[in-house]
Image 1 (spheres, rainbow over the protein chains, first blue to last red):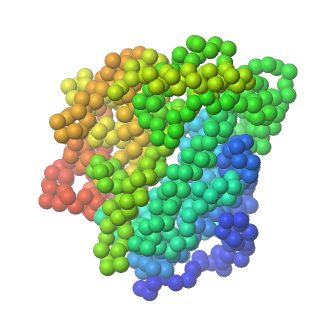
Image 2: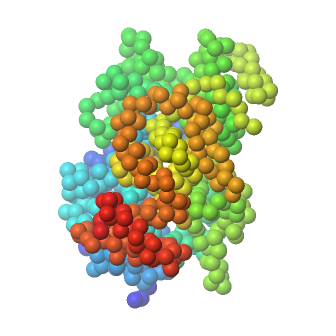
Image 3: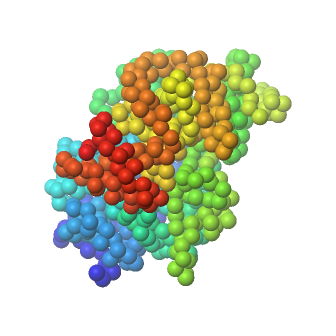
Amino acid sequence: MAEFRDPEYLSENDHPTDRVRCPIHGFIRYSVNERRIIDSTFFSRLRFIRQLGLTEYAYPGANHTRFEHSLGVMEMATAMFDSLAAKKGGMMAGELGQVEWYADEPLRKARQVVRLAALLHDTGHAPFSHAAEKVFHKEGHETLSIKVVTDADKLGGLIDSIWPVGTAAQVAALLSSEPLEPQLQFLRNIISGEIDADRTDYLLRDSYHCGVEYGKFDHRRMIGCLTLRQATGGGLEIAVESDGIHTVEALILARFQMNAQVYFHRIRRVYDHFLIEYHKLLHAEGGLPAGGVLDLNDVVMLSQMFEDARSDVDGERQNLARRIIERKHPRQVYDTGDNADEDDFLAIKALEKELREKYTDVYFYVDDMSGKPVSIHKLFVKGDAPGVSRRLTVFEKDGTEKQIGEKSKILAKIPKDFMCFRVFADCPDEAKRKEISDFIAGKLRNG
Amino acid sequence: MKIKVNFSWELNEDQAILAEVVKRCEELGHKPGRTALQKIAYFLKRQGVPMSYGFELYHYGPFCQEILWDAEMLTSLGVIVDTKRTNGGSRYGVGESYSTEIAKHSAFLTSNSDEIDAVVKLLAPLPADTLEVVATLDYFFRYVSARGGSGPFKADVMAKFFEAKSQYVGREQWVGKLYDRMAAIGMVGA
């Protein structure tokens, strides 16, 4: 079969006739059919969910939403798919064609499924994105996104009425973490993997809106260097040509620095905490508006907070609402830096008790990240225990293959995890804050 | 150097289940290692025990990085202890803080007790390579059966298994018997 050169479409209405401007990617194009999904209430809801919760309290430009991010992920996923198809279209068609649903039009169907999965991957997000997510979903937003995609009374019915029956199920399969046909695994990894469309878009977009440079990397070069290889367990896996190593390193470094500088910025962490506590109380007091998460968004919740903040009642919930609305947060008096470990966790938790006993008039918030680091990457590097890393194969110019962790010395130096603990004290007296800070430092220094 | 813990840390439900698994394994005379903990957690999730872990197919079968982190955290807190094997691998046992830390989750653990009991009794005695094989067979059974039909599944699952795990080529009979035993107790379709 000839290599796949130009995008092909399932129908006339799948041609990308519509477009919107995007500050990151220029124009984002979509079809008349896709516009029906974009205009649906389930997708439009993302216009009212900010991408980074209350990060704007630290970076005032960070008011962008899940709506534009989702469009951006669709654009990036498509660019990745097309780049792979231009090089390995025959191989892709051969593998995809083994799966019954894709057999008649493997590349056209797969391209559309990838675009929809990218577009809809965040539709289950709760208000304020990740900030208070655990109050709304035990298993994260992905489970709800899958329901939105598959339920007939949500988008499932519409998707299967526009595209071939089964499209919704195929989109959901890419969003799920359930086992997938090996032939389709590379499609899932375009949406969610080590060098995926989601990360590519949010690093660039969040950087742009925060006004920082940390998340920027040469994504066009990276996408141009993607390729495919036959996976050991059958199917295909995404690999990278040797010219693309530096862009992969840059993406992973960007991820580390964006976590350190933006996603775990101290101000944001305090307001994440307030949002969690506020929503917990609201939930416990039966104050959450009727309906499920899909009826909620930032605007609804902020309205509730404004109402609570202005209330004559002086309860904990109202106090939290006032803190959020009036941006009144405790000040940081200690942080471990970016490379905290379990011993730091134990030390900070032991200290927390002592602090509360010693300074009974001060409100403390200890950000312990629940003792769980954030994964920066899971790629194999030298020294890893066997079986606990993901593969990313590099194709050398002579056709030989290596794992990127064997090739890249930079990758080996970037921490695989990020963890940082902080102590905040609600204490307007600067001298006293200094005293607390010195007390903590002294305690931790002396063990 | 480990710092002495003098605070109360509220375990989450995932961590409570892992600690309970270690305890029940120990009661049966076994000290699970990392592989056993991974695969028991995988099958508990399969049995419907509510856990937030997501598993991906890695070199040694279904794997979840968060379980490793949680095991390390439980070890740091003294809820479980890790008595290293001579080859450096982990062997988990119940730690000093187990009773106090787990108490808050007793109702949750009781409500899932039968499933934990059944899975631990079945899997705790098995060596690591057997656990790797059964978890991987189960993983591929889910993949094959998800494509519809009522079976038979065994041939397709075995084919997928050996595509992914060529290191087991030559041991087809053993792997096939394991599959039959799983089918006999209803873990997978025949």
